[in-house]
Image 1 (cartoon, rainbow, N blue to C red):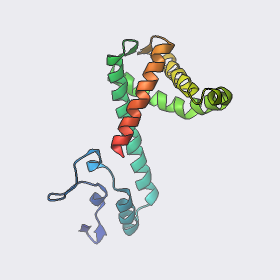
Image 2 (spheres, helix red, strand yellow):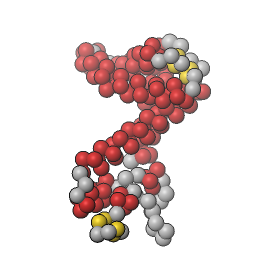
Image 3 (cartoon, one colour):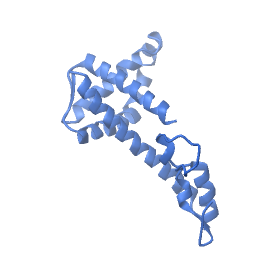
Amino acid sequence: MLLHGGHLSQSFCLNTPQEGDNQRKSIHSLSYDLPACLLISAANGIKQSRIISDYYIMRFILNILLVGLVVVLLSYLLPGAHVSSFGTAILVALVLALLNALLRPLLILLTIPITVLTLGLFLLVINAIIVLAADALIPGFNVDGFLWALIFSILLSFMNWLIGSIAT
C-alpha cells in the first residue's frame, strides 16, 4: 500500500493491474475494489458510506450508458424500433430504469393470477408494456406496435443479462 503523508493512498481503491501482475485486463481493470476501499477509508477516517455510494453511482452510470448503447444497437437491428440519437437512447435507458423501478412492481402485483397461470410468461407482456410506456413518454423513440415492443424487450433483457454476466 502506498503512504502519502502518513495516510494510505486513495489511488489504491482503483483496481488497476500493475506491471508484472498476472491479472487479466477486463472490464474490471478500472473498477473499484470495494473491500480495499473500505479498509483504506477506515484507516484515513473517510466515511465508508461515501465510498460505497460512489461505487454504486458509478455502476449505475455505466449501466445506463451500456443500456443506451444497446438501445441504439437494437434500433439498427430491428426495423420496428427507432431512436433518433444516442442522447435519446440514454434518455430511454433512464426512463426504462425509472419505469422498471416504479411501474413494473405495481403491474406484477396486479397481474399475479395471470402470471401464475402462464408460468411467468406474462412478465414478457409486462416488459413490452413498459417499453410502450417509454415510447409514449419520449419523443424520438418509437416502437411500431406491441409485437416490436415485445421483441425489443426480450432482446434488451437478453443483452442486459449478457452484459451483467460479463461484468461480474
